[in-house]
Length: 471
Image (cartoon, rainbow, N blue to C red; front, side, top):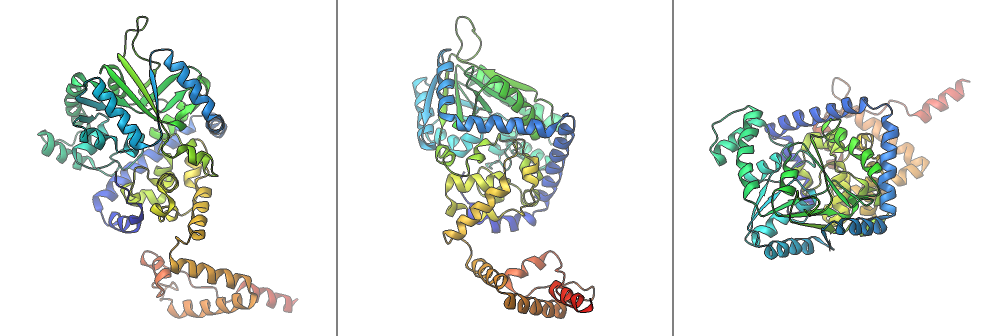
């Protein structure tokens, strides 16, 4: 997916005027947010569980090199091949080489954000391979030549009416608004792909170092089909996916399902520990695990290391008032919402995503929803400070903040500024006492969508002096 993060302002403006998008977002985010609250309310001590999960992920990040080596040693013992990719280009090259080694022509893929990050589909198609996404949402996105707009629900931006029209146009299905009929029709098409593919590609929700196990969680079973039916199975996982133990997995998988889809557990929890062998004939003949860095090691050495604890549940997106209104495509890359506003600048360079740290009201809803309690607002503030320090902030904003800082540091300027603001806002107030239009360009954006309350007739300092005189 092409990086367009610096076009956030224009993309958000277009999204706000898109009636179909607003309908889809209202339905999708409300349902997902409500489901998470219901699921978490069933937990005896949800906050204690969140802190336990947070500790597991942060401990894994601290011990990352050791745990990756343990994972590799354990899964290699059971017939898998582990490969390491420094960046997306190296990872794509490895997958193409594996495909050529095994004379692969047809590939089926399960949902994977890591493969979206490195544009794997485009690389495979350029090598002459046929690639089919098998997650229903990703399949719809692929049919439409579109890109996912949500970490967990790729078609959060589409209404079922749009899916109906797409299936009629691309697949020749008789028009139907019934989700069950749409799903059954897609299942029939995808079953043919599963049975004919020579390679299956999946991501990984967790890599368990203690046992050398790859864990994926799905609701459609497509992950299991991709990893079991084709003779070659390739796992592509970011190195931050490794965790220490089965006990940590048991904690994290509870929160992943509850936070992502509002379920106690997803329909399928698939644990894979190697290729088929004499003692376990099920599964692929060849299993490869590609451990992808692509900037993660660099992030781990910074004050933003906590961002790597993300378990990709999408809860922060559903809770975010900005995402709820503009959707995922406005963020201009694979990762959207609050966590995307942190990860995209870190992976792609802060100058290439300079608007994203400002795409937040800093209300803290993302941190409250996060199952591992990542301090997303704190990291957004640090990224903003970096932008200002590097001169990437808008000149008008920088000048305004500098003027404000000077006024706040000088009692006389503070008093004069307050007096001027009181006079100006009272003069501009409408009949209801609110300011409907601020003329200053930077402040005028506020009154495009809401009223601005006028300053109080008297400042606190004036009231305090009067009170002191009276006493």
